[in-house]
Image: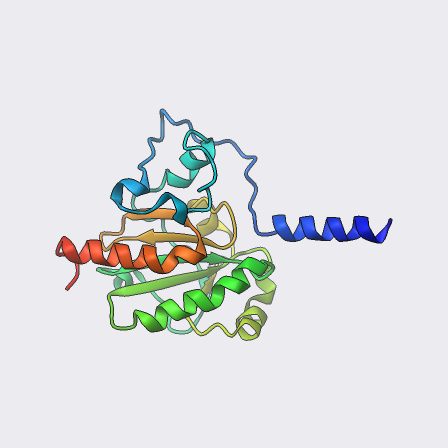
Length: 208
């Protein structure tokens, strides 16, 4: 095979490697009404679906958890102090899905780590979850990437399925009541989204 063809194939693999399978059936809009996150102040440009038309079925899939209780976390192999429901109660929570084989996740790691440091004095927590696929390199990735935040492994893939993870990395924001407020946020707008939700929760008296 010519070198140019091999290079093109390698580039295509790199582009698509951090995208989950989007071919499975999408929810029926009449059965699963979407809640538009931008109605609550989140900008459309903050989501990975930002370039798609709003009637694209993928928007329905991204928003179907919004306004719903956070799905249960079924994770193991904590690195750092394990988090439980009591640790997350009354806090804004970022659920951060990443995979050891995903270059975009490696690029996002310093951004997520920096949030922990910047918001250390705020009622804020991050649940950072490594995907089942590639999980055998979990500790290797933590060390190589220089991850310092608390992480856990989705050993059976149940949490990924419950949150309907569509790409890697995948960021979900949950408010102090345990309600999903945004899913599918892009890494470059995480700071803005987190700051907005913290401000909104404080304004309604949910945070001190």
